[in-house]
Length: 156
Image (cartoon, rainbow, N blue to C red):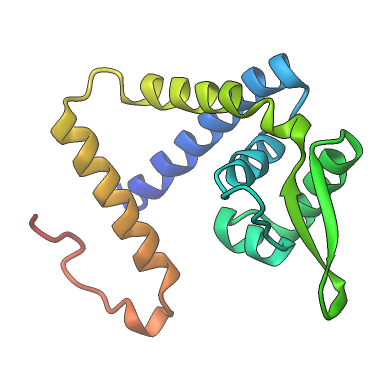
């Protein structure tokens, strides 16, 4: 069936959204996007920050969803937002101490989802799946002209 990989990736994405929403909302009252934003920010070095554009690029979420997530996280006390030196319109975003206190629990949720996702797969299969997903992401991120049709599959 043409498009089967797209269909499976979409279904997988939806299932992960539902699972992560249930766990993050149940424990912290966070949406999936809010949990992903916090997870990204919590992996920054102490004292580092990102602007919303950087988060948008890293996470691939829509600007509207990211804006809503940032607003809710800020209102919940999870963020420290400061003006960017030299450009008051641009804001630097970092996790607050309250967010840092949740770091371990958020990582546990993410690790549990990954374990659940990979149940029944051997280590080499997990490595192959991770490689294939990264390669697909690179392919889709390139300009369309660079993605010339081939046989559709490479031998690895």
